[in-house]
Image (cartoon, rainbow, N blue to C red; front, top):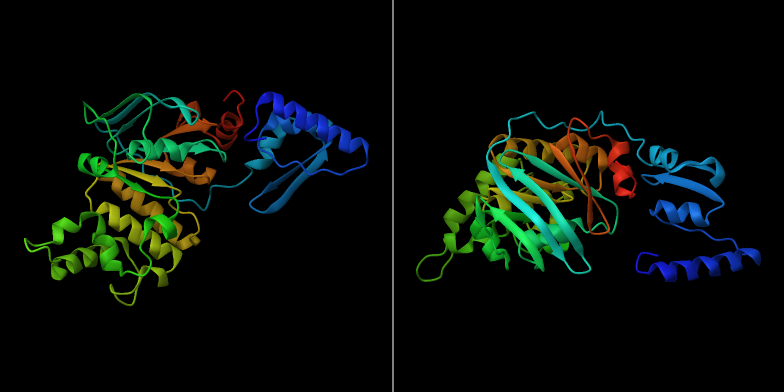
Length: 329
């Protein structure tokens, strides 16, 4: 029903009921709680690819379903170190893009991690792309370091001091056939180019070596191609690439997706260190315990709308998921 109007959803449900009367069995997969309870005879919850529960719909409430959905423990997650908020770095007011996101409002201070939580289709990434100039908002204002910013391109964003680490490192974050060194230098290639347009390989390699030590990139050589690295080391190269632009605001989109537990802990530690050094960070993650462990505040979105902003002290898995499902947080 994600792309259907309310009238079309009603028509679909009428058709579904007619098929049911004819003896057809139907599996309805959705995160729209009200629709699940409207159409279902039995509600089954899966979590992290595993069966959790299955009960007649009459015995299930939205609250009990949400409890089953978020029943993960946070013991294995690195927790962000508590720190004082610095100066206001980014302020977003009533940011909107027609049919994409509407009236988004939040602030990011220096040294703060602001997490973005939400289900599939919540449009968190679209907001990030607007902040980085890949998408353009129709209305609203972005204020960066006290100045109104009209960001219409990534070049503009980088010049301001904003960097964006994409959720798809293989397709969008790295040039796979190229070396670690080249990938790290790409966004700032002019820094390594002399007046004749030739790349100064020594300076380029020195930068790559400093990031290898700083982020603990494990590779046989800095000339190893990005495509031959493990997922965790690929992610460290993407981080190095954008940290090399010396940003003041770092946007991380699913920063630990598809990497092992050890690499995930290392990435969490890197994020914590950057925040301690005064960098403002926006972290989009579908991993709810990760958002809760790493964020000072959490913006919860649903279908392009901001549902809640929760401080670290008041945020729980249940409250975040409740807001993401459109219920009162």
